[in-house]
Image 1 (cartoon, rainbow, N blue to C red):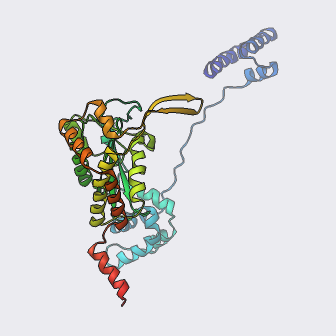
Image 2: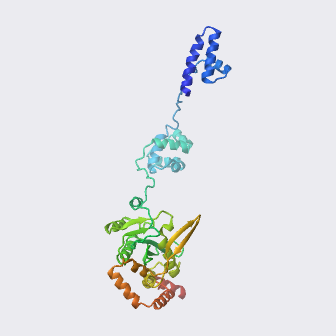
Length: 392
């Protein structure tokens, strides 16, 4: 029985108890209340004898509006200071009112001056809340520029046993030397998840136009037809420019889960092997440094794709928390692409010619020479170095 039903029942029984003429009839009503409501006998007698409680009406107390005389002055000062909040207005309220009074904008009486000095910050905030500001309300932080694009780009990752070549992963490697201040070089790294074929290009800054230009050049020169593209959630990739490029060329554009680097595991591994272990963690922030990086990659890319063998996982077995992996025989990325039969005629001819004419030992020596020299300093840096050496 609900509380409302118990009250209604008790009200009815209270009326019957009041009209009962004999002691036996009242005792019978008490027994009935005890059985229905589970009351103790003494409490049932008390409840039946108790009159119906009167409903108290809530009376809202009307308080007089304090500081009524100062409200017009407060509004003028609020407008003069460009409608600030109470926290900013309260400390300068009285002083600004005196300044405006000196310019004839308002009149101050002794009572108004007293109210301006006595009004508290919380009370001032309540008064300002009733006033209407003509300024547009500041919008709360909304969606980031690429949030809408993320809804169009599905979160997926390539299968570890993918067999269709032409599914590259792309990533950006910073060359900031440990400081993210200013503009510095980035390496665009693209890796095919099936064959391990990889390409790299350096660009100054991470602007969408520069990144898109170099990435487009790499994809257009890819040795196999490209059917997909997978990136992380950086704005250099998640943008309308790259999305339209993928839609135009019928590429399945996907992105990783946020903060899940293993979704881009293939390109992350190549970043370590062919970027960090080659050019290191130094800061490169000049056009000359970017040109040097691209000369290094022009030597490194054919060397890695034609001559450096790699192993690939062909089987995984999980036993509790341990995962056992089985690898195939080491082969170069070019050999793996040739076995799939996906190489274009032009790419096959070019790579076969390079395989016959290029000397891997000579390329290795050339790489060592380039890395030993390092990037040439810019003209400005050379002048600063000369000034430091020459002294004042």
